[in-house]
Amino acid sequence: MTATAKVRMYTSAVCPYCQMAERLLQQKGVGDIEKIRVDLEPTQREAMMELTGRRTVPQIFIGDTHVGGYDDLSALERAGKLDVLLSA
Figure 1 (spheres, helix red, strand yellow):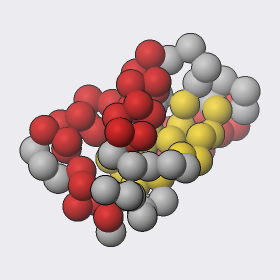
Figure 2: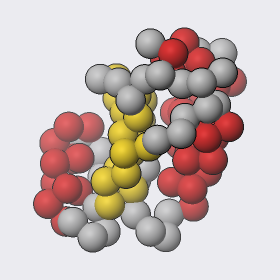
Figure 3: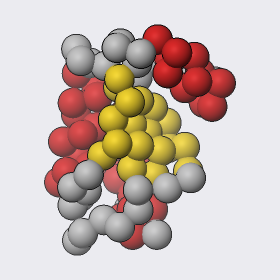
Figure 4: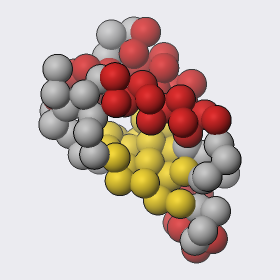
């Protein structure tokens, strides 16, 4: 399966959950993830918090849908709903 939805992920360099989320997305055929590094750009963390109401990374958007963090992404996969979201 090749994903067609645009994926955006707020991330930082030393975040194991960010790496796991990226690995899962790549396994699903996502070749291009727009990564926004909140550790390098503190203003991006503020923007992320306004958008999501959350402080932690990763925060993942698929298209216009805020998925949440790695646990949320993984739960979507287990429920069989991730492919549908990625192909939209």
